[in-house]
Length: 101
Image 1 (tube, rainbow, N blue to C red):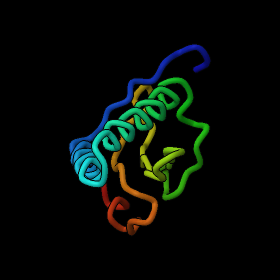
Image 2 (image 1 turned 60 degrees about the vertical axis):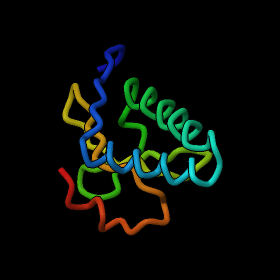
Image 3 (image 1 turned 120 degrees about the vertical axis):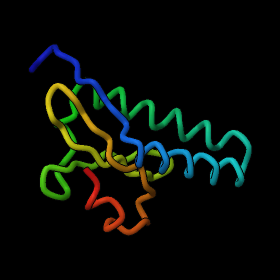
Image 4 (image 1 turned 135 degrees about the horizontal axis):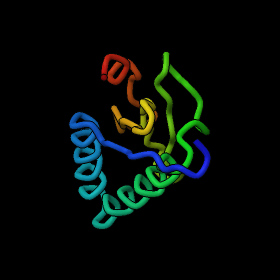
């Protein structure tokens, strides 16, 4: 599908993950949560263009990682959509997202 864009959809559980991460980082230092959102936005832009570049980590689920903060964006491709299922720090237990659909 060269030249075509994917539509990225952040599932409600992933939205909640991101909200919790934002609040946590803002509690550490004002502005840090916003910087995480900027990082996540950059990853989403890559997923819109070429979501296949990241490896599969569990069945058809793939993982993209934010460079600075080490948050994993777990997603699945159901063309022309990319569904983000979880946004969790790399140190979190992967069992937390394996059952998400």
